[in-house]
Length: 77
Image (cartoon, rainbow, N blue to C red; front, side, top):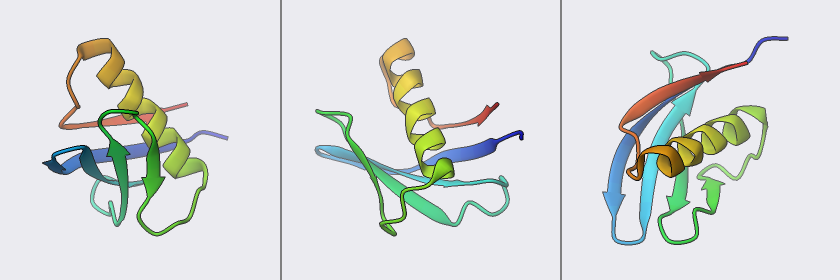
């Protein structure tokens, strides 16, 4: 089974960054928040599922690779 998730940075504040994400770039109706110090993440809706985990891991991976929070992106597997 293939998995796709798209994400886009929505806002950044002291201590956290917020992203929209979803399985379709035109319907990114969910949000996640990442702590910029610990890199811990949580879904705003409280629903931890495959899409949330995939988006969170890809965002964190890009941050580690580039040293800055990505503006947007996607992950496919």
